[in-house]
Image (cartoon, rainbow, N blue to C red; front, side, top):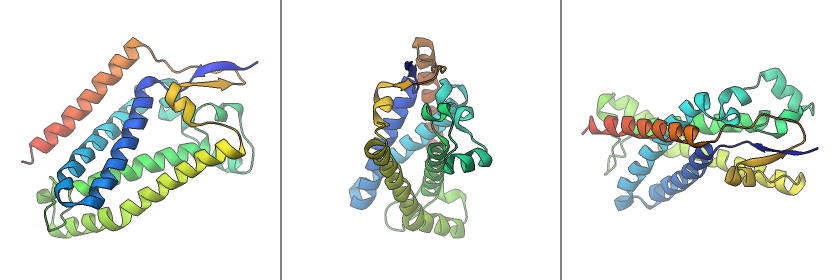
Length: 221
């Protein structure tokens, strides 16, 4: 008998869609350039705040949002690719989905970090550029503009492609649970905690992360 499982708690869902909006805004503002660059930096600070929140929430958040719930060994990933799959893989992130999540979070963090120390020598200079050598600034700028952006676009395209594959080939809608939070499960599974107390904790964590980023930026003025 199938049962309803709360997979993605509200903070995780808000994080996900806020990150989508910010990444789209970052790419758009970078392409426009000029007067849009101040907004590029603002959205970059927002992404950094969101990432810091996710790293903390990956430890203290709802069960299926915790990194421990989708941190798989190489052997498990290998078996999954070969077709040996466990029922719980269909609830949260499966081994391949987990790899995608970690890749996106990791490369987003690198992209933001490189942006903080980049300098396009025109009008946009990262707030931390003055604290590193010119050689480091040059490397970071090259990576940020010519490498990191392409890697992230590739990962996003792969992510969207995977969602479409699951929807049309396997008949599984991965977007709906990220909107509503719940998923039908064929096995008895633990639901993620998603109540007033956990949501209040998430708000406090995010505000703390945003305050930390704001403080960092203020110290570079």
